[in-house]
Length: 388
Image 1 (cartoon, rainbow, N blue to C red):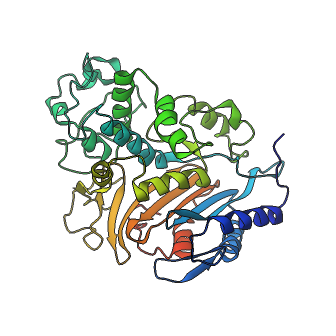
Image 2 (tube, one colour):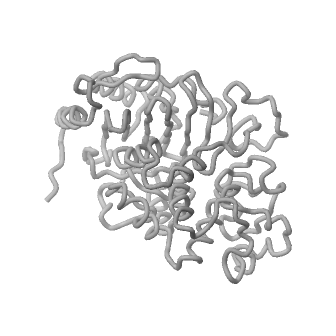
Image 3 (spheres, rainbow, N blue to C red):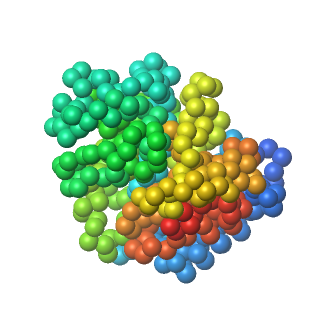
């Protein structure tokens, strides 16, 4: 039987031990450096997080910091269940929402290295019969612009698709512009690429991700599908009427948003992203290289693009990541927000530093900016563009 903590004090002690063993050589136990060179300690960080949870009424919070190829801080705080006050622990899983997308893009890059597809290969006839002959995509049968679709275009949100058609998966899907000419955040683009890979390989996303991402990286508490082993360990507000719907929705894998994990597991992926583990050097470079400047006023905005917007950070998108330039160097980021959860990940490769934040709350609390600023000194992430 699994041992579970029953107090925040015990969680803190265990976390301190873990953190002490994971800090980079040359650092004092339980310490790391911010982007500006200031020292942070595990005790300071945990105290800050606990105070923030109280003031923001956050139910569950999972945060991990990586630096110099190691996890230097890793905590999961709060409860899985408000009613029973069951403490969250290392077995707890949470919704990542769109933090699913970078993980899926890594899977795609693994398959690029295997020769299954090319990043810039036209996908119109990638499978036989072509995807437009399937009922899900029949509305695109006479759309000539589909011939311009590639994996890089789908992953960089420049396919011309809306975020999601209405009704979801059942409505007509159209294209708003020529592929590659503009940015329009789109879960549909990711789901199409998932559809193509599943048809090509004969395997579902959950199985592919387990084989090519989770097992190689040691992500034991991660899945794109709900699994029986998560029973009792799914942190979602039990007072919310959404809970049954949220659990059922995880019975269909979705590359754009169904990943279940915690920050401890996701940090292993962050380390792989920072050091290119599992990818050929050229593929890792292409994965992190900006492909498209983002000129919109906000993440989900379809206002007329303004080339001067976001010039200060050169906001762009790679095949899987948001990208910006800062005084701390180039950075990769992604946001993941749904009703009842808020998630954020940002990596500064030049500083070998990254952080992932996952939280559960029934309020739109916008705590990620405070956490990344305090724990790693990131005051550069474009949170206003993300409408935090």
